[in-house]
Length: 143
Image (cartoon, rainbow, N blue to C red; front, side, top):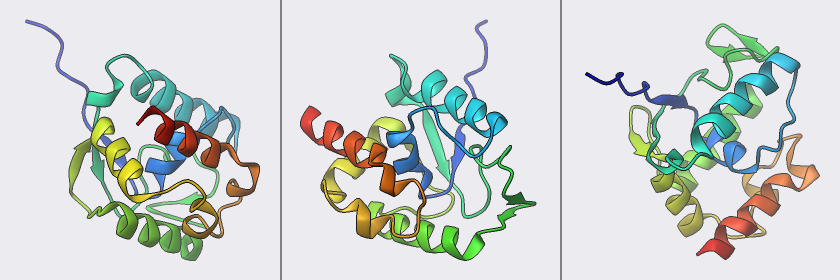
Protein backbone atom coordinates (compact mmCIF):
# COMPACT_ATOMS: atom_id res chain seq x y z
CA UNK A 1 0.00 0.00 0.00
CA UNK A 2 1.44 3.42 -0.99
CA UNK A 3 1.73 6.49 1.15
CA UNK A 4 -1.35 8.64 1.61
CA UNK A 5 -1.46 11.68 -0.63
CA UNK A 6 -0.52 14.94 1.08
CA UNK A 7 -3.42 16.86 2.53
CA UNK A 8 -4.67 19.82 0.53
CA UNK A 9 -2.83 23.07 0.95
CA UNK A 10 -4.90 25.72 2.70
CA UNK A 11 -4.73 29.12 0.97
CA UNK A 12 -6.31 32.48 1.55
CA UNK A 13 -7.28 34.05 -1.81
CA UNK A 14 -4.36 36.43 -2.31
CA UNK A 15 -1.80 33.66 -1.82
CA UNK A 16 -2.63 32.16 -5.22
CA UNK A 17 -0.95 35.12 -6.94
CA UNK A 18 1.77 35.32 -4.28
CA UNK A 19 2.66 31.71 -5.11
CA UNK A 20 2.79 32.52 -8.78
CA UNK A 21 5.28 35.35 -8.20
CA UNK A 22 7.33 33.91 -5.32
CA UNK A 23 11.08 34.29 -5.89
CA UNK A 24 12.60 33.14 -2.60
CA UNK A 25 12.07 36.30 -0.56
CA UNK A 26 9.84 36.76 2.47
CA UNK A 27 9.17 38.36 5.84
CA UNK A 28 11.60 36.17 7.79
CA UNK A 29 13.84 33.16 7.30
CA UNK A 30 11.21 30.77 8.66
CA UNK A 31 8.50 32.32 6.49
CA UNK A 32 10.66 32.13 3.35
CA UNK A 33 11.68 28.53 4.05
CA UNK A 34 8.04 27.51 4.56
CA UNK A 35 6.85 29.28 1.42
CA UNK A 36 9.69 27.80 -0.61
CA UNK A 37 8.71 24.34 0.62
CA UNK A 38 5.13 24.92 -0.54
CA UNK A 39 5.79 26.72 -3.81
CA UNK A 40 9.04 25.11 -4.95
CA UNK A 41 8.54 21.78 -3.19
CA UNK A 42 4.92 21.16 -4.15
CA UNK A 43 3.52 23.57 -6.76
CA UNK A 44 6.50 24.01 -9.08
CA UNK A 45 7.22 20.31 -9.42
CA UNK A 46 6.34 18.05 -12.35
CA UNK A 47 3.16 16.96 -10.57
CA UNK A 48 2.45 20.38 -9.04
CA UNK A 49 -0.51 21.25 -11.26
CA UNK A 50 -2.42 18.40 -9.57
CA UNK A 51 -1.82 19.75 -6.04
CA UNK A 52 -5.15 20.41 -4.34
CA UNK A 53 -5.67 23.74 -2.59
CA UNK A 54 -8.55 24.54 -0.25
CA UNK A 55 -9.57 28.20 0.02
CA UNK A 56 -9.78 29.62 3.54
CA UNK A 57 -10.72 33.02 4.93
CA UNK A 58 -8.21 32.88 7.81
CA UNK A 59 -4.51 32.25 8.22
CA UNK A 60 -3.31 29.44 5.99
CA UNK A 61 -0.33 27.19 5.32
CA UNK A 62 1.76 30.09 4.00
CA UNK A 63 0.92 32.27 7.03
CA UNK A 64 1.92 29.59 9.56
CA UNK A 65 5.42 30.95 10.43
CA UNK A 66 4.82 34.59 9.46
CA UNK A 67 6.08 37.06 12.08
CA UNK A 68 2.96 39.20 11.41
CA UNK A 69 0.56 36.35 12.25
CA UNK A 70 -1.63 36.86 15.30
CA UNK A 71 -3.53 33.61 15.91
CA UNK A 72 -5.90 33.22 12.97
CA UNK A 73 -5.37 36.78 11.76
CA UNK A 74 -2.58 39.22 10.95
CA UNK A 75 -1.28 42.45 12.44
CA UNK A 76 -2.06 43.92 8.99
CA UNK A 77 -5.55 42.38 8.88
CA UNK A 78 -7.40 45.29 7.16
CA UNK A 79 -4.86 45.21 4.30
CA UNK A 80 -5.03 41.40 4.10
CA UNK A 81 -8.85 41.49 4.08
CA UNK A 82 -8.79 43.96 1.17
CA UNK A 83 -6.31 41.82 -0.79
CA UNK A 84 -8.26 38.63 -0.12
CA UNK A 85 -11.56 40.24 -1.10
CA UNK A 86 -10.16 41.59 -4.37
CA UNK A 87 -8.48 38.28 -5.25
CA UNK A 88 -11.52 36.19 -4.31
CA UNK A 89 -13.70 38.34 -6.59
CA UNK A 90 -11.19 38.26 -9.46
CA UNK A 91 -10.66 34.49 -9.28
CA UNK A 92 -14.18 33.44 -8.23
CA UNK A 93 -13.01 31.88 -4.97
CA UNK A 94 -15.06 31.10 -1.84
CA UNK A 95 -13.97 29.61 1.50
CA UNK A 96 -14.11 25.82 1.51
CA UNK A 97 -13.73 25.56 -2.26
CA UNK A 98 -11.08 23.14 -3.54
CA UNK A 99 -9.21 23.39 -6.81
CA UNK A 100 -5.90 22.21 -8.17
CA UNK A 101 -2.93 24.48 -8.73
CA UNK A 102 -3.42 23.90 -12.47
CA UNK A 103 -7.05 25.05 -12.21
CA UNK A 104 -5.92 28.07 -10.19
CA UNK A 105 -3.40 28.98 -12.91
CA UNK A 106 -6.17 28.67 -15.52
CA UNK A 107 -8.32 31.09 -13.49
CA UNK A 108 -5.45 33.52 -13.12
CA UNK A 109 -4.80 33.37 -16.86
CA UNK A 110 -8.51 33.88 -17.64
CA UNK A 111 -9.26 36.65 -15.14
CA UNK A 112 -6.04 38.51 -14.31
CA UNK A 113 -4.54 40.21 -17.36
CA UNK A 114 -0.94 41.43 -17.40
CA UNK A 115 -0.72 44.96 -16.07
CA UNK A 116 -3.61 44.53 -13.61
CA UNK A 117 -1.65 43.78 -10.44
CA UNK A 118 -1.04 47.42 -9.52
CA UNK A 119 -4.81 47.65 -8.96
CA UNK A 120 -5.59 44.08 -7.84
CA UNK A 121 -2.68 43.99 -5.40
CA UNK A 122 -2.93 47.61 -4.21
CA UNK A 123 -1.42 47.84 -0.73
CA UNK A 124 0.88 44.84 -1.08
CA UNK A 125 4.47 45.77 -0.31
CA UNK A 126 5.76 43.13 -2.74
CA UNK A 127 3.87 44.47 -5.79
CA UNK A 128 6.41 47.26 -6.39
CA UNK A 129 9.24 44.75 -6.94
CA UNK A 130 7.64 43.46 -10.15
CA UNK A 131 8.18 39.76 -9.41
CA UNK A 132 4.48 38.94 -9.52
CA UNK A 133 3.86 40.97 -12.67
CA UNK A 134 6.75 39.19 -14.41
CA UNK A 135 5.38 35.80 -13.32
CA UNK A 136 1.89 36.78 -14.53
CA UNK A 137 3.31 37.75 -17.92
CA UNK A 138 5.15 34.40 -18.14
CA UNK A 139 1.93 32.53 -17.27
CA UNK A 140 0.06 34.33 -20.06
CA UNK A 141 2.89 33.69 -22.51
CA UNK A 142 2.61 29.94 -21.80
CA UNK A 143 -0.98 30.18 -23.04
